[in-house]
Amino acid sequence: MSENRKSKKNLLSVIIPIALAVAVILGLAVSGNITKKRDLDTPTASVSQAVTQTTVAPDTKVNIVAVGDNLIHNTLIAAGEQEDGTRDYSSFYENMKPYISAADMAVIDQETLLGGSAFEYSGYPCFNTPWEVGEAEINAGFNVFTCATNHVLDMQKFAGVSKELEFFANHPEVTYVGINGSEEEYNTVKYKEINGIKFALLNYTYGTNGITLPDDKPWCVDMLNEDKVVSDIKTARENADVVIFFPHWGTENSHEINDEQRHYVELCSELGVDIVIGGHPHVLQPVEWVTNEETGKKMIVYYSLGNFISHQINLNQMCGGMAEITVERVNGEIQITSAKLAPVIDFYQRSGDGFRFSVYRLSDYTDELAAKQAQSGATVEYFTDLSKKVVSEEFLDLN
Image 1 (tube, rainbow, N blue to C red):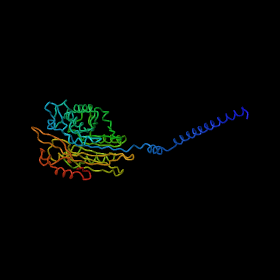
Image 2: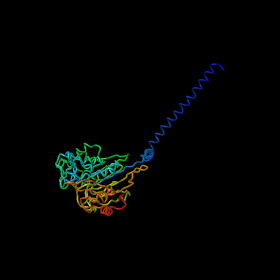
Image 3: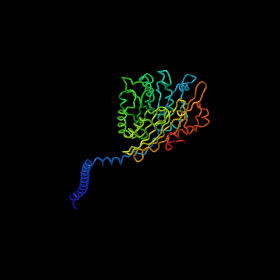
């Protein structure tokens, strides 16, 4: 074979594979363009389904606890006064701290205004609570404060609200709801994301003890107004995995549910709320599942958690509850897997010229402690029987 023919053969042996490779690449490119066109023609539902199948969020869990009214009377204010002139209220919550700090979300109903030293400290009927009480709550593990209560305007209306807002500005690690520093904040739903689950937190009060909202700042407190409630829940439902509704409502010192409570529970069920946790009556009220007849969706309702800490003297006012709720995402579905109530006991005994206060879970409360109570009859048996009378056994956590 001549050198010329051999050279041509070698050249062809190089060119032919290259040409074949180019043809394959062009074929793939054409195929890719077709595939893209078919994707564009694919129904939206199919695309959405495909995305869902590949982006299912991982399984996760959030543990929530919530307690009732943090009602700080004059005697409680005095109980935290130290000999050096400082204030320390950590003893109020120390016996509950293990349960509070262990939760992912720990909620307290801040019944009395955290106005701090800007105003004279006071108890009933117009309350002003030291900031040190709020700091003790945070140190115990509470990270959500519900502030829309009937006492929120006790200190010169917005002047008091602004000092409570200042307290929370100093503690960005916690979330507050129910009060607002601007109209924009009033129109904004608050969210808290924990372990990949997004919660919407809504808090309203039935009233403010006859004190009118400031004319120039009617947005400073979230009122239990149906139009406002409906608008907020709809927004929350669109943007959150779980919607929690915290109403300040009901009849004081009554274990019975009133018509306003039933109305808003029905409304919440219609709008897809997941959890309702109420405060204000100062005593325990029932817990129940409410099922929407049209959708089948179940909503857990705690009508009233009663008092957490106070110096109210009726025995039934000394027994409150701590809601214990577990929310889980399993295979992409959000569900409430546990909903319980652990009774809690307001403990106070005489100490010198005043009193010493604390809160105990009923499971930690003993006859020895009962014997030290300033109120006679505050026995383990009494509080156990009361809890069983008001709250269904399905929900009671007595252990």
